[in-house]
Length: 323
Image: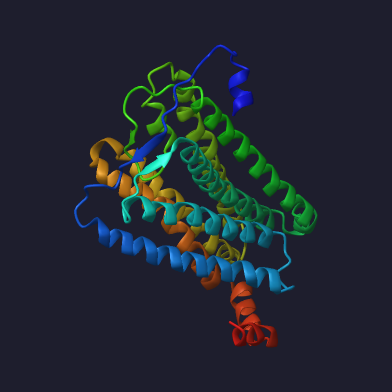
């Protein structure tokens, strides 16, 4: 970040606060019950995503390219919830609302990176389903392990660069007003609005990033399933069409869980209470990582069979005996 600011001029001094105070969930009635629920969600998320990652890693039958994306989604869900929920509980449940300036930027980086990567990971899975159904004879050529790894790596690179730019622009802001962030984490929009110098570039990013990181992936997924629907409608046999569609149910469920709450929250943003909006957004961040592994285990026959094989293997019992 020092390199970023030095490019703006050596004589420019920015006033950075020693800390921010996160107050988004403070003062909400009976909020401690919500913290208990968050802890339960976090525990289930850690167990579920760890199981999915372990099964994909241990079972050599799950070596299809799409399981690279599934493994990455489980990793992102586990990493994202581990970055958000423990800190959230520390801030609000254990009454440590202040967070140092640099720690706040690191907190922002991990939260935004993981949330954005979830949407792009759904794009990778939708592309896999698109090619598998529309070009089944070319699937092995078009969707290879190398292609999927390159796609996932490019998504990571794009998101990390985008979030670093946002954080770099935050470091050029001076804060001489309030240091209270009315959110459940170090939210970019809440932070730049507290500054007392020109924050127009941050405002532009706050308008541009939701489009690039959330709505464009959502539009791509919708278009891909529109193409899938048109293809299945032309299939002569209804049973073949239903069989192909069943392979998409798990992914469609993930898309619905991730995007529908965001659509509802941002559509009704001006008509709902700020506390309700904060709780809705926090649930949108935390709830999908818990449900994703459950959905994939229940909806994907290969993973269900792999879980049984791993649990029945001598290696599994060896691990249990030493746990």
